[in-house]
Every structure is written in structure tokens, then in C-alpha cells.
Image (cartoon, rainbow, N blue to C red; front, side, top):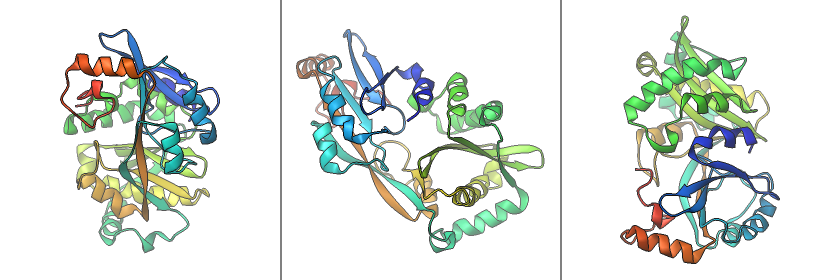
Amino acid sequence: MHPAYAESLAEFGSPRQLARCGAWLLEREIPGSGRRDAMGCYPIFSCPDWSQLRSDLDAVGDDLVSVSLVADPFGEYDEAYLKECFRDVVAPFKQHFVVDLGLPADSFVHAHHRRNARKARRVLSVERYARAPDALDEWTALYGVLSERHAIEGVAAFSKESFAKQLGVPGMVALRATEGETTTGMLLWYVQGDAAYYHLGAYSARGYELRASFALFSHALEYFAGRGLRWLNLGGAAGAGETASGLSRFKEGWSSGVRTAYFCGRIFDRKGYEELVAARNAPPTAYFPAYRLGEFR
């Protein structure tokens, strides 16, 4: 929710704060049109006062063509309220894996994960960076490995400048796994209220070999439970929609349950929206906004 996080994404759009609810959007130019639309900050839209969101959206008028976002599954709303705010699209998008830190870890962490964590922690040490911004060089090197391994593009292809700002946002927690003096993996988290949100993780080739991810997530559960938090949000599967990916199975093995993240969209300028869709000459699609079909491919 912090303005510094919105600013860290300024290369993808101009940060715009909604006056009453305090949340942030990213305004974007719509290529070749002279018009603008907005999206929520990646990866989820978080709101200080959900009760004021509808009033803010009602006040937009036709200043923007549309807005699209994924609502924080820990937000203070129900589906009916989202439909009042977003009159065109409200649909389940992903199941986010969550951890109830009030439960003993052994009651829900998969036995396979516990075994791998024990093996990894015999050879790796895990610690928190005292100052998250000091992690920048190591983090960007590890994220470079991840980007090459998975051909990351689009919003998630953060620049070093963006990461420098993200690491300075209040609530950032950077955990690293080391073999001797060498960092083999890192996790980035944001603490907000009584929850910590998993943001990103990256590993070196040696980190993959030593299963650094298991050591880091095992430590994270202990670390955040010891600081009085109630929840962890591990996020969902990679990409749009649900897939039975290795990442989703990995997250599921640490989780005690799930929460639904809703994709939400609203058209403010319907005439402009229809003109943009017609000009795009796109096939019929459930993608929203339809005139941006394929933008994150």
C-alpha cells in the first residue's frame, strides 16, 4: 500500500493515488489512441480503506478508459462489494496459497518439504539482511539467473532501478541462504498489517542444487511466526489462471489453506473502449481490457 512501492513500478505507468481509499493505480497510455487507462500495481491491488474504493472509482468519470487489477485476497471486502466497484468484470483469478501462523507447521507442511528443508539447512545458513537495500547487488544477480532460466518478460522483468526502490519500501524483509560466504538464494517479503506477502524468490545454480528454496521457506515460517504475524500469503501459480506447475505444488506444500484472488475490471469510457476494441480488430476474447489482448505474452 505504500507510495514508494507504486513509485518502484513507475516504468510501467504513472502512479495515481485514489483520494479517499488511499490505494494506488498505474496510469498507462494506450498506444496510438491518445487515451489512457490504468492497472493495479503488480502483483495485487492493496487498499488502505476498501469501504471508500467504490466512491473513488465512481469519481473517475471518463478520465480513464478502463481499470483492471487483481484484488488482495486479504482485503476487507466480499465478492458482492467488488461487483459494486467493478461493474464489468469480477471473476476468480487464482487461488493464493496461505499460511495460518497460529497452527503448528508440522500439522500442514508436506512431509516431502520438511525432509528437503532439513537436508538443505544442514549445509545452508539462513538470515535476514539487517538493511534490505544492502541486498541489491546480490539480489539482481540472482534474479538475472531466474530471468534467463524462465525467460521472464513484461511487468515482472524488473530493472535494477526498480529493485533498488522495492528494497527500500517500508516492510520489506529480505532473507538469504548462504553456503559459507556465498549467497545461494534469496526471498523478498512485504509485511503489511498482520500478514507477510511473498514477493519474489531467486537462486543461483548452486542454490537449486542444494534446495535453497526449502531452507528459505522453512526459515520464513519460523521467522514470521516469531514476530507475531498471523498470516503468510505465498501467492498463486505463475502466469494467468491456474496451472498444475511445479511452483504451485511447491507453494501448496507449505500452505495451510487457500484464498481466492479476484480479477476485477471496470469500463469508465464505454464509447472509447468500444472504439479501441474495433480499431484493434481483435478476435472475441474474455481478456480485459480486450484492446490490450496479448500485452503480457
